[in-house]
Image (tube, rainbow, N blue to C red; front, side, top):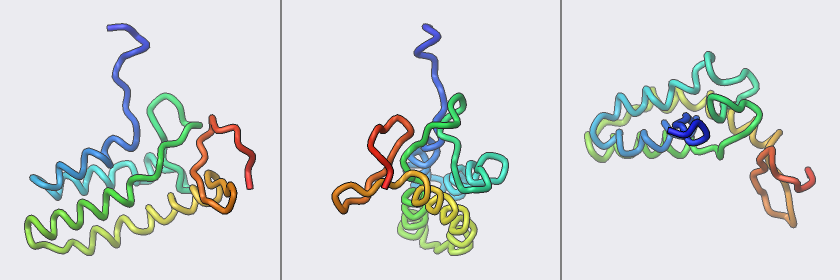
Length: 124
């Protein structure tokens, strides 16, 4: 395998994987979502590492959407409402959202946009 195309891991992977996982094992899906939100990985300012080799980049904030989807899937499929999971994940996701608002939002022509480090648009 060519070294430039070797598999790598992005932090949004478990967020996307959690949705189909929740259909068969919602507890495992929720554990996967909580894993990267732990203090071992998430920066105290709320930033999630984008991937294993570039900590200055950013991935779109999909973890909150995925956590809500996993909650709703579990509710529909298994009849359980795991509000403790939502409470546990809320504060961590709120920190991540705050980081996005303060660091990665651009306001262009009255529209809110997500900015990545490679974006050349001017800030606010």
